[in-house]
Amino acid sequence: MASHKSALKSIKQIKKRTEQNQVHTSRLRHQIRKFRAALTAKDKAAATALLKPTVTLIDHSVHKGVLHPNTAARYKSRLTLAFNALA
Image (cartoon, rainbow, N blue to C red; front, top):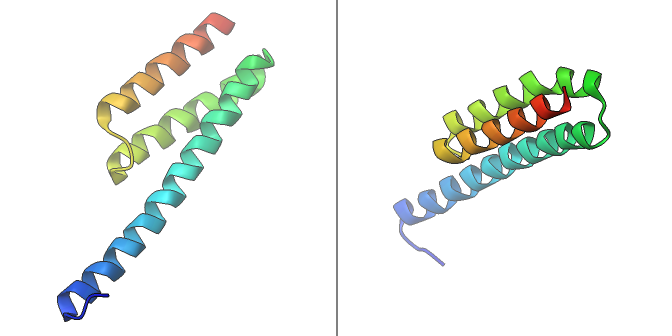
């Protein structure tokens, strides 16, 4: 276990950041799953309603540092292509 004050503070900060990253990651994955489920069910109304919030959450995850910008762009591109294929 760390004994210096700075090391103890660092451990607390890392724990807090890890918890927040897990919250953001979980929220993002659940949203993407809901959207993909709507696409799989060919439910155009639900997919239309979920597209904008899903893309917004992906952008928010980039801003928070949970996702790399290129990963986010890839997710948005693939989800949008799948949505357009449904139409």
